[in-house]
Length: 487
Image (cartoon, rainbow, N blue to C red; front, side, top):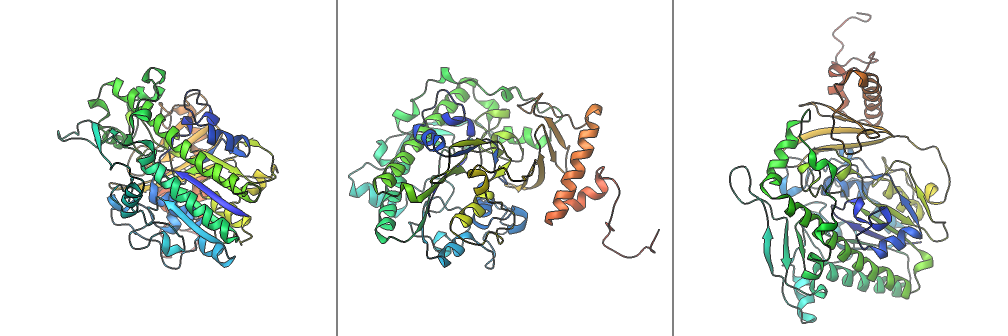
């Protein structure tokens, strides 16, 4: 079985037609979903690029693989996986798979995609490396103009400096965009693998629609901002929330820009999604032309979501809202019926799925469950909850989340904890952790989170032991044996 893995970066699930957006044109991804399994409750293990991608690579939760932050803002964590870490490409290579990865790596500083056996240009960094020699050669070979932007959109930081760049007009035709270049290189790699005849794993990792949104006019202005319904959570007051969220809102300069700018930014983000969808369509079309459709499983997902104004935030950060933790997840396996599944599943589960389709042992992917039984229409016993974690970006900031059908619990050791009733409050505006009527829910979920963390070996639970209502203890939390037995 060939494996084609398509991935975007910082992609909101509500920007796709197949996930209910009535305005954004995403015909190619919609068609992929219509022919495969669309997971409605698909989540990232952590809403930040490098740790999420390392979880895909290893099938392990971030606390276990320990690659916990992007290197650009690293606060002392590891910057590369340990050399003895299991990774799925090593298992595929043992099965004689050809391995290719075109696009964003963002998985370490000393070790790149080639270190794990992938063919393709080495494209480091968090955003389109428009000064990369291979991209510049592509422009020259095709007589295309160089990268140039204007009309920069940015706010003002609390100290009066210019904020992060959020969007700009790109003065290039679509054929010169980095997204078009990536799809072109992916098609070339696909043709090479097809000619060889051996099974292959080919990934295309787009750098977008991660901000800043740098687009040609046709995409920058593709959608009328009047179509945009602002997210209800734009009414966020941060009352009863961890103060770090208000700080992040200031860092991302939300209140320094008119609301019309936010509406335009969302419309521009939609244009970025359509641009990427078109490039994915080019890859899928070429796959079919090469006669590979009947022998190739296709995956589509993202590393995490993006706020785009929700909760008066941009980018992502230390706030475990659905906007950045729920992501698209589509798997099409030849011969399986189209369907929509509502189990809680994770990006990490893609690892065991890849391994099983390739005939490899899934056990080394410690925190991953193969999605293949779900894709095949079975109804196996499946957890009714989902765990996620966060470790910081600009500074260490540990969080753990338990997401159930109706409720979400977020533990913030240095601050207030959060509890949301997603049925009554789907936009997570009201933190009900301290509400008396919610105490039974809070107590039950805190104990469940505690047990799950202990079971998986996540030492975060040690803080929970003396600080929260987790019931009777069955171990010595002091990790000592000073007291006589029975005292």
